[in-house]
Amino acid sequence: MATFVLVHGGGHGGWCYKLVAQRLRAMGHEVHAPSLSGLADRAHVLSQAIDLDTHIDDVAGLLEFEDLTQAILVGHSYGGMVITGAADRKPERVGHRVYLDAAYPRDGESLYEHAHEQIHMARQGLHDVGGVPMVMAPMPGFAAFFGVTDPELGAWTDARLTAQPWKCFEQKIVFRNEAAMRAIPESHLICTSTIPGRDMTLIDARSHGRVWDIDTGHDLMLTEPKWVAERLDAIAQGT
Image 1 (spheres, rainbow, N blue to C red):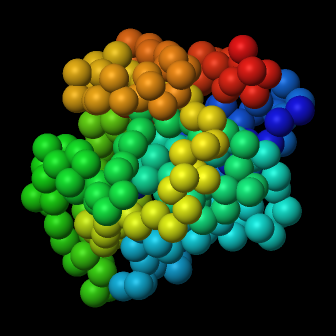
Image 2 (tube, helix red, strand yellow):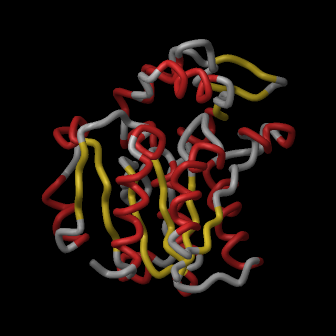
Image 3 (cartoon, rainbow, N blue to C red):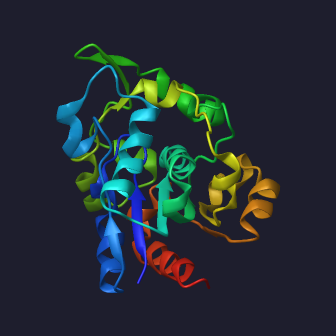
């Protein structure tokens, strides 16, 4: 049995891993799928202070207070920034990093710099919510932006998306224990369509070839939960 910590991307919450978490638990794994501060079921704690460091602390705190060791951190999209930072903060508690069509940052890089084209588009919708600059305001049909095209699943997703604090995308990640973090094994589950925008040479080298792709929408944990769960189970088993 492995312990998974599933970290969502921008505008999402722990809810987006429901279908994957159900399958992993049925396989006998322990699964944590927290919502990050200011989002989803934690939208009530939204404040001007929430940034990337807040979300890194959310996950690092979970690792510490749940006394997790050898945890498999899984980050989707923006969540790749978060799991990289959490593994850097608590390398002794992490056994594997999995990037789920996710950001793969370098030291001193923000998501805005890392995925400028996509995030610049989102920035055009910058708006104020209680004094907090926000992006990705949810609206009917927004799930399609994340590649969720099934009408029923799209409506379910639309009902749960929340806006994202802009500071999370703008703040640069700063490593404290990069050597220890990089020593933790990593794997990548990637949507085929995003491969051209990635440094696959670097990813292949650092992951030692633990890279798999699937032709589906960006929210692959929703569109292909069986494949994602089976691949995560295989990663946990070292296959």
